[in-house]
Amino acid sequence: MQEFAIGIDIGGTNTKFGIVNSDGKILVQDRILTNETDTIQGFLESLGEKLSPMIRKYGGAKAFRGIGIGAPNGNFYSGNIEHAANLKWKGIVPIANMISEKFKIHTKLTNDANAAAMGEMMYGCAKKFKNFITITLGTGVGSGIVIDGKIVLGHDGFAGELGHVLVRPGGRLHTGTGIRGSLESYASANGVRDTAIELLTQNPKRKSLLRAFLKTNAITSQTVYECALKGDKIANEIFEFTGKILGEAFANFVVFSSPEAIVLFGGLTKAGDLIMNPTKKSMEENLIKVFKNKVTLIFSQLKEADAAILGASALV
Image (cartoon, rainbow, N blue to C red; front, top):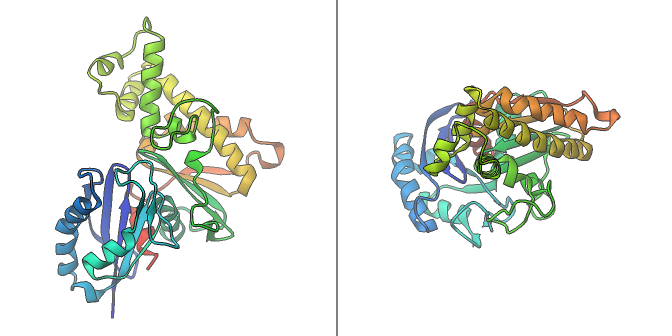
């Protein structure tokens, strides 16, 4: 009997993977840097170095039901990653076939945020919901939409790319897509960094702990968070601004699908109330009356990597 599945979460920065048993428990997991090499072949070699020993330890290929992958611009229907903005592998990459051939295990693919949504629905805080949206606030902004208990895929498998909706038309350039003013340009970890740089350069006389990081080109969403905790006014303004934009976008999403909840996860959620409070305030201010105070904003209770790994493994 095939007792195990493998879940792989390909993110813009890290690729996380793990072996999952039939009870939905991650038995072992690891990670590699996604863009450490420029080619998909190099990525597969790095993945194989760590994943192959794990497969052997749990009985070899014959012991596995399959491999599920969540990836940016992952197409459920074709098994291809298609024109992903945050990956070095450009164009169309037949990732499911390539991984299936490498490990000799049947492989399925979906969008990374859809995989996370499946993980939340099966194992996380969304178990009680039939209508919800997951939002990943990481290197980019991913999303998975569940309506009436089903993931929304669309006719071509790419429905629900909410990170690329326009929130400031003609605004900040997204270098991966060439589009100006998308949500991902403002509300991702990279967006927080860019907002910090803009505020510091536009207000050169304002004091901020962040200026030391600006001089060394070391500003990240983490450094903004750390400075905000120390009471830095600009750092706190950055989270207020980010939350305002997120809340406006969420109000639009609510009008579209009337979710019971919006589940937030990813590295940026470590900021806790610094990001949650302005986001909720902005969302409620921009909702029409019929939707006010109906939608719960919650942080995922699964460990950062677990939702995507579990959701991906559930594909098989």
